[in-house]
Length: 236
Image 1: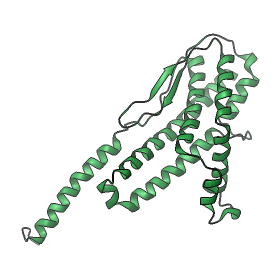
Image 2: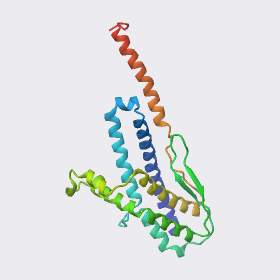
Image 3: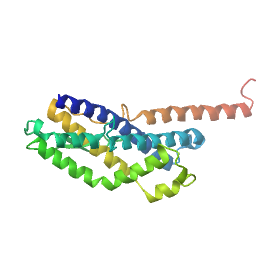
Image 4: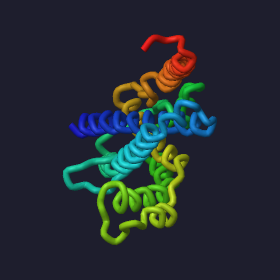
């Protein structure tokens, strides 16, 4: 059935969006720690620089997949929206109240959301179309960066990555807006057909706090060990 197909796709896409949200949150935490001149990050710059680069790549690639326009043997929120619009006559209208998330959860605050009210599924699709239109320039630039930097080795842009990023600039707030637009669309489908909602966030968004806290204790013991070694308090 058509309804079963779009629900299955919505569940897959919201899982993908949850991964993008989780990577976004970890990236935001690392940037926050980095701005605070965290001692551990300064001691392990190689590891954390590679981690940050990997997170950026994952965020950009996963978000780009969510909003792809390709239809050959693939699907995305954009193609799912088109399916819903083209088959709206197959869906029985009824009022419903989906959840709209407008802030990804952070290490200090949970995800923020509100409840919307729609008189019909058709009204929800119209609202979603407007949301995607607002993100259109962001999506275009994101696809340009994905195609020329993250997904392919484009001969035309060798050693010109910074130029591409500048020309097709996308801020991380822009990326978050795209992710949440996709999340809210998929949640609307799940709310309408299955009366469920999925709030995307890290499994435990204090993981990095815990990791750096333990590492900080280890560094204290390391300094004490070096001090004791220099003062001859330890046997060889």
